[in-house]
Image (cartoon, rainbow, N blue to C red; front, side, top):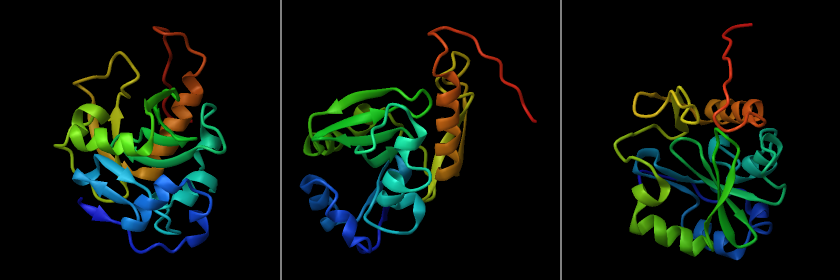
Length: 189
């Protein structure tokens, strides 16, 4: 654990969360593992990048940014690239931030944490060599969703809010592009 959230200061939010997540937050009110490989949000009003309420109900709530995220999904965490982990009922889903695709990840929050502890790099598909400051995510250019990306992509630590909004906009713009389709990127206004 390389960062830990302060004490719970959004007590009202706990009543809106499943007991499995409340148990985790009562032990530690959110945390970051391995310099950003995994960030679990907390029941905190600030900082905004750590606030579970902001991710659920704020102006940049994930259900407003992504078509595939439901209003009752709980975006409890994210990986170092800004892919989101959602609780839907008891299951954990992964929102691929660049594409907007949502897929099943684990049957329960306990199963998610068990698999993460067993093989964080493999299960979350992250590399532990990247270290960021709290509140930052890695921005890949070109984005991983493009064929031109991959091992040659540049990775830059950027504020989490900027990365999240960039990915949501990208996912919205490419939503109807077929697999293998081509797009044109235009810079500037």
